Amino acid sequence: TSTIKDLDQDHLGGVMKIIREDVPVGANEDEIHFHIGQLNSRTQKKLLRHISKFVKEPQVKSKKANSQAKAPQSSDVAQARTVLCKWQKWLQDSQRPLFCATSPSIKIEHSAGVPRASMNEILYEKHGIFAMFGQSAFGTKNRKLSHMVMNNKWNSLCTNRCEHQKVYVGWGKNRRGQAQILEQTTGSFPLFFDPKDASDNCIFYVGHWKLIRSSVTWFDPPHIFMGEARCMYAELAFEKFDTDIVQAI
Image 1 (cartoon, rainbow, N blue to C red):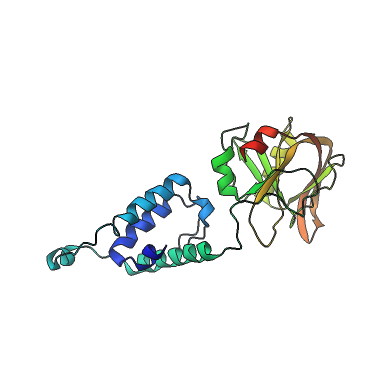
Image 2 (cartoon, rainbow, N blue to C red):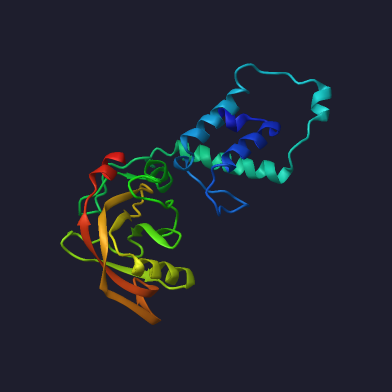
């Protein structure tokens, strides 16, 4: 971290290129927000090898080489320093864990919690999960539901698995399309919960749940729930708790 902070402008471009290779699709081009959990191990090793070149043996460049070197654009340098400063600040924040053994706000049986990007490394294309974990509540691919991630700002998690899990889907064209995919899903799917605790950004597996088709209710005009417009209401029934997923996490 200290090496990155002290790198000269000629080397920041390489660091920025490596980090950009692992930034999630759709990131803001003007300022990239990410945490260390979003850099997979391969990218971290690549970044370490790149930075290590500048600390093994200090090299003195000739004036001729310096004059021929192409300096990066000032905007690129400023952007790189912004990203690296955010990264360094995150590393120094000891209150933000990469792993949470449990969550006090989840009352039903659940797995350990990890950030969404780390969950991609652990579960993507394994244990029946075929879509990436992103910011959306619905993990879909080819109009099929892979998994679902609820959070307590949009829906409350039930406190007993004998209860039906109530789900309100947000209003909007994209949300309506996701709700239609949920309505068409016939089998059970993995449900994850993001408690939005102030101390972490982890999500937790809370079992496989199945849609109760008779519970589906569409709203037009939208129904207001928890202060937000909703297009659909549905209920889920608990089916199983996959110990293979729990062990993998």
